[in-house]
Length: 383
Image (spheres, rainbow, N blue to C red):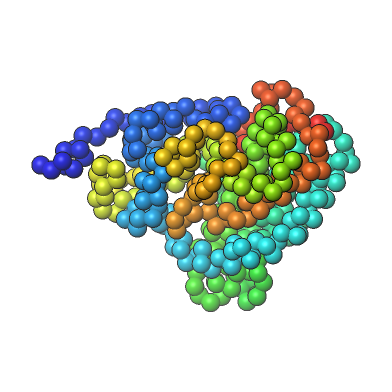
């Protein structure tokens, strides 16, 4: 028996990973324990679904997401690569730049309303929710009149507190909406996402059902900026030294945004699994064909071998190869857009509201419960 076989026959214990009600931007202590126990551990899946492997080290995460022997399509059962290719133009640097000035104007209008109404205010409801909705709808080609409905559906789809039936109904309703919109644009030449998907359907490259599923995925993912920016501003307002530095040194803002994106705990637990299509060795552990495996981008962003003193927020950190938008063929296509929105939000709000501060003690800021994506429910502020 070889050494590898000896190692792989001794399976690590299965660890329960409870859904903790985490406060503020606290990092999940269970994930911290799992990271310390080893690069590859086993976790109990919810709803009596058995167990799965969890990979937490940066280089191992990179290996798994780039190795075709670990298949997400086996889980999702859709041709993600063809769909991503059909809308790639909207998410390139050029495509994102196309909406920069419109995004800046929309944000200025929201801040104008905020200032006009006066403090105190919920920064989340007034700006951090409305702005990402407006931007992703602009990129998707969703008319302004339909933004509120999109937001309602998205909140229901992303929440686990209303039950599976409510989530599925919201997903079906959003899907029906996109089916109509994409169908109307099959022969179009627009640059927005639904037009690009409609053109791909018209050319026979993807089916309408595939295009609709992908549109729902992109639309709901676009609102992640609401939660990320909510955490970002909670962090800046509870550590005012960070905000003051960004006000005084605007040239470091792009680099600082990347560090904040690396540090912020974006989600609870992990996302979608992959399935091993054959036996594969990862960090000396044999992952057998048919096993489910998860990667933790949160853990990878705290790997001390890649990010020295990972718990420290260091605006001078360079290089900063964080994986907050994922890695490999399934990385978030909206990463550039999310970074643009974050830069606009930080720059505009810090510059236009120099006295911006929390209106309540930090511990009284309510955070969402029962949602996969973390963020404040409201962010009461003064200025």
